[in-house]
Image 1 (cartoon, rainbow, N blue to C red):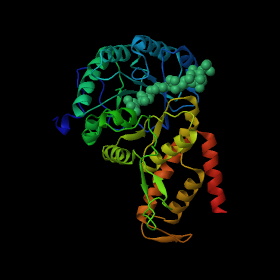
Image 2 (cartoon, rainbow, N blue to C red; image 1 turned 30 degrees about the vertical axis):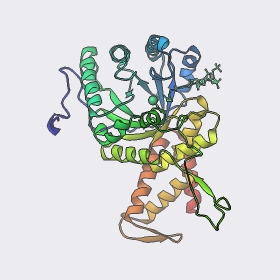
Image 3 (cartoon, protein in one colour; image 1 turned 90 degrees about the vertical axis):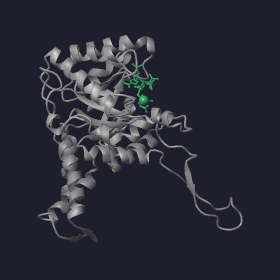
Image 4 (cartoon, rainbow, N blue to C red; image 1 turned 90 degrees about the horizontal axis):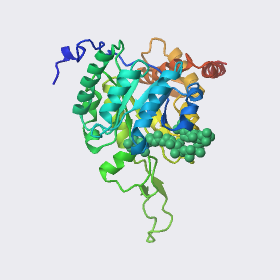
Length: 356
Ligand SMILES: CCC(=O)SCCNC(=O)CCNC(=O)[C@H](O)C(C)(C)COP(=O)(O)OP(=O)(O)OC[C@H]1O[C@@H](n2cnc3c(N)ncnc32)[C@H](O)[C@@H]1OP(=O)(O)O
Ligand SMILES: O=CC(=O)O
Ligand SMILES: [Mg+2]
């Protein structure tokens, strides 16, 4: 165990100072693309204008014989593209794979100054983050980088879930954690064959009304991911890092995708992955607080004055705790509105309407 005093010392001579705070930047959607796929790569400059995060994926979904092409593609794209305010992330191959060492060496050396966050898949415990932490420090020092790279873990193994609190606090570089429902389902030996989302067989049923066990019994589909998302959110919040829902694989089912994203948003996640351009606007809509909620939250804050005591607003009791929730909503809205004039106008219009 490192002592808390050592936590903010660089892990290699010449490496940049580790971060003390995770920068607050919009990351409602982490948009995945395969940098070795020419069609997808051609869309990157346009996608950079409408996404919060673009992620060059080198791991699963990239064929084994295309790994080098994907890595080289990401280097070229990063060098050639002006990403503006959009962050550039990558997902490297897993730590037990034959590709990850070259992924990290190449990317940090060639484009370490363009990358914001490195996503590490299949993290099992703090030891995986410690390994990456030291290696990144060595590579940053050699590349002469002045800003530390941040690390994001995917929660997609049973041991990762069991160790999620120690993973979240394993390094000052930890930026956040995403739920990876597909690999996690396999690791847990769940009997699903989907990428995220629900399952009609996972349900509860109302009690029988009489002797007939089939008659009049409504069933309600349950959320397979509730426990893991909630646990991930707590682990992230207690360590000052950000939680995300991961992939929703049924690209055609934009309705259920929106539901899954909204469940994650309401439970505390700040964003989700988009796998296809059609999911970008879904994430943008869901992970931006609604104008009505922002207007209401602003009103509660205004009427609560110094934030203590209790008041009644439209028949609802408000006190110190509800005003704190309202501040969470308003702070997020203000952060997003600062770079999105359309959203800012929608929030102001809804606020004026509620005041009149
Ligand atoms: C399961 C656990 C995980 O690890 S999830 C993360 C790993 N998976 C991924 O990264 C998948 C990323 N997405 C994809 O590969 C594709 O979107 C898949 C799902 C295969 C669908 O592609 P395709 O059949 O081409 O869809 P389409 O015909 O509707 O595409 C229309 C045009 O859009 C493009 N497109 C597609 N996806 C992306 C993307 N993620 N980023 C940028 N562009 C994308 C297509 O190339 C196609 O382009 P064009 O109109 O033909 O020029
Ligand atoms: O990598 C993501 C997953 O769901 O697996
Ligand atoms: Mg995975």
